[in-house]
Amino acid sequence: MSKAGTLIAVAMLAAGCAGLGASANDGPNVLTTMGFGLPDEHATARVGLFRQKYPGIDLRITEGAFDEQQFLSAVASGEPPDLVYADRVKLGGFAARGAVQPIDECVRRHRVDLSVFRSAALRQVTVDGHTYGLPDFATVKLLIINNPPVRAAGIDPAGMSATDWALLAAQTSTLTESGGGRLRRIGFDPKLPDFVPLWAKANGADLISPDGRRAMLDDPKVVEMLRYTTDLVKAQAPWASFKAFKDGFDEFGAGNQYAKDQLAAMPMDSFYINTLATNSPDVDVTVKPFTDRAGNAFTELGGQAWAIPRGAAHPEQACDFLVTMTAKDAWVTAAKARRDGLAAKGRPYGGTFTANRDADDEIFSAVYRPNGNRIIEQGVPVVLSLQEKAFTLPPSPAAPDLIRAWRSAAVRVLNGQQTAEQALADAQREADLALRRVIGR
Image (cartoon, rainbow, N blue to C red; front, top):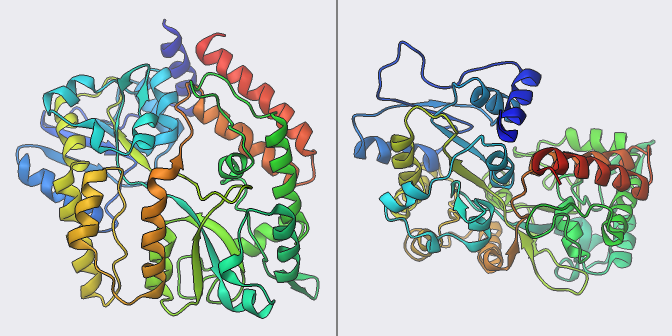
């Protein structure tokens, strides 16, 4: 058995077998997906367009979040879905495990111009010169500041940033409120462990080598970053209390942490400006780029990709689907549908941000219009200004393991189980072992 096959078999044993493809009773025209849903017009309009173009295909969307172990198990069992929708950062690992297949022939057959995709997004789906998926949405990370408490503390929101770490720590101390032994407002949430790559980059460090084959988690700059950010949290409250307070936020509702003055500032994914604009349009916030320690604006680009699993029953039809879903015309159709759908509910449209540069050009010249919502009118220009300044984690054959390693390290430090040096030394050993297991170095 090949190394990739062995790795998938191990995953299958660990997770239990679970086929996600069409059943034996299904017709030959059934096309199945995993990891995708139909929550809004961005999804339904594009799926509707595919169904119009390919009426002979019985498309079955299995709604639900992507489950990595379930996916690997389905591939190992020989019953994968025809398509998988997953975080781009993990695609390199799936390619190394042989869990997804190259789509070079698909790209050639449909004459897809890969240059229209944002280069950072395209890098994440390209492994050893082969294309393994097509990028879908594109999100960036930015800074959202709650103006009233910041101004009340004598701090100008426009001048608040993550550039000067000593100043940010002092401001965080000023903005944090506790009473009766309980945290009442977080001064600054660094968003650990999710935003570890962003903070590492801000301190001049990469977590993974450019070729994705070496982890650099014990780099002194990474250690310094993790010590600083975890101290920033622990200075406000013990991690258990800090996390419990956050878990109580009505993050996607009208009573969110900005509206209820439970948070002064944090970095956040760009989709959240639409959430705030829709659910609490009058909340007074400042939206700014995140900055490195030299004051340079930068961000991390994220998002999902469509890929075709190894052993998919209908790879040609799956190719037709992923090309349709990521094409300019589908995105523009979806953006118009989303805009009109929100307008019918009396809600503002804050744009549609994709990994397809041509689609975004059309959307922000012909579909999106400033609508008087201050959050959106601040946020859209910031997002557009950051998209070409973004970095991404390179595709790595052990990507899922590396992500688990640094996330677990951050949590151990937050819990007080280890120092940053100890946690990242352990994480480095875990990452090295995972890389040896996958690529044999």
